[in-house]
Amino acid sequence: MTDRRTELAENLARVEERISAACAAADRKREEVTLIVVTKTYPASDVRLLAELGVHHVAENRDQDAAPKAAECADLPLIWHFVGQLQTNKVRSVASYADMVQSVDRKRLVDALSRAAVAAGRELGCLIQVALDAESGQQGSRGGVAADGVEALADVLVEAQGLRLDGLMTVAPLAGPYAGRPRTAFDRLMEISSRLRAAHPAANMVSAGMSSDLEDAVAAGATHVRVGTAVLGVRPRLR
Image (tube, rainbow, N blue to C red; front, top):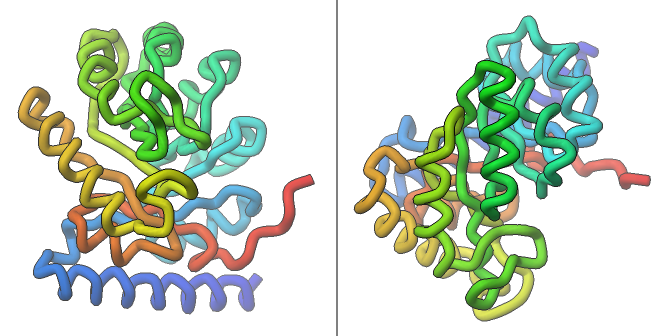
């Protein structure tokens, strides 16, 4: 366990150096960017070590893994983010432990999350996932709503009980005009965010960038980066 703690501490230090350097290069303050550590496929023991090392935000993408892990770590002062594609039959479980759902991409999901949040007596922060590889009216290959559907979904979300519109999230697309161009993709997300904030000023969170492209996200203006592999190591294959 001591070796694992040392490994995580060293990895976190390297990621911190990258974020700090990216902020300096973009003339931004370091405190403008929040690190979310994506702990999917890794055990609750790693989450505990991360908390000891000062991590406050953790993310998961599969409810069947996240729910027991969150329960095991319920005594820790952590903010849990759900970042995966979310089916409505998992909403009740996710609403019981997640503080924020970053993958809201359709009205049916908003409705289900609202019912679950109200039933649990909780308020869930929500990010609209933007699919930059999606045509108008379509969803992206990894979830998300097309750019021209963001404003309508935001209007639905702000009226939903138990939910709070906090901003936008995207994943750098693997196909379409932004494939292989993360900085351009993140710049486009910031344009969409600017329009959203004109109508909903409090929705100022922008979650973008992962281990491979966090510098591009920081340069574009992201407020949160989601880093997994660079902190926890190469993930084991899911069976």
